[in-house]
Length: 304
Ligand code: PSU
Image 1 (cartoon, helix red, strand yellow):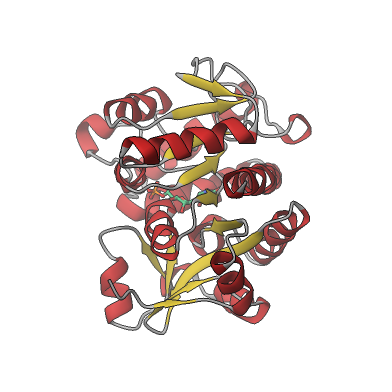
Image 2 (spheres, rainbow, N blue to C red):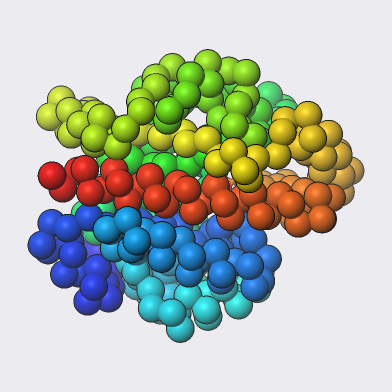
């Protein structure tokens, strides 16, 4: 394989020396959060990873190369790119974007592929994509789920985004053989809220156990990654009975306006931001930062 990967020296050196590296996605920057909070988040998340002893590698496609780690200028350029000018890349369109020299932001699925190509085993994000509500007629199921089933990267997220059909999302992951591990509690988290009322299939309470299970999957030759579902910190949580009516409203507006496919998630996140007067974004940033902290701990445990 001769993948077009470009590394800043810091990431290259850390990977060659076997030091901990955490991958970060870029769709959350271009499509998930508004300017300028997206850039602030991208910088803070990298700082949290450094503070916890790992090297951050934000992944995006630019100029025909997969950038595994970006300097501050590149981060800012990406954060300023309007969402309609950056492709939202998943497994299906990663190669097209690279071959045609376009700019692309990587979703969970595409970031997992690129991280694995680069030799990075841990990745932190906000919430994975999953089964959309009404999927029984729309068939809208995120490619993130199948990626978790085939690419060996441990993904740390605050569960799946609560705009989704969470029970169906967990069912699909179970069918695909993806370990869904709640971190430090029995309940699966629901992105903005700590609990979902759904019991997690697996629970772990420390980074070393998560690293050990990833290593054991490799020894067993099991393909695919693991999803670590880390609940949002207490002080940033939006209780379920507060956020659910807001999500319902955003969903009915999306339906009325005929929003479909890749536009659904960015539309809903944007409407929920407006309806909560920015509270949803503050919570989203807080959960991403905490996921980055945990991912750095797991990456360190994997190198021991
Ligand atoms: N986490 C966030 N905000 C986001 C995402 C994750 O806090 O916007 C992005 C990820 O890139 C994820 C994508 O892969 O949302 C899911 O999009 P979809 O539902 O269209 O598959």
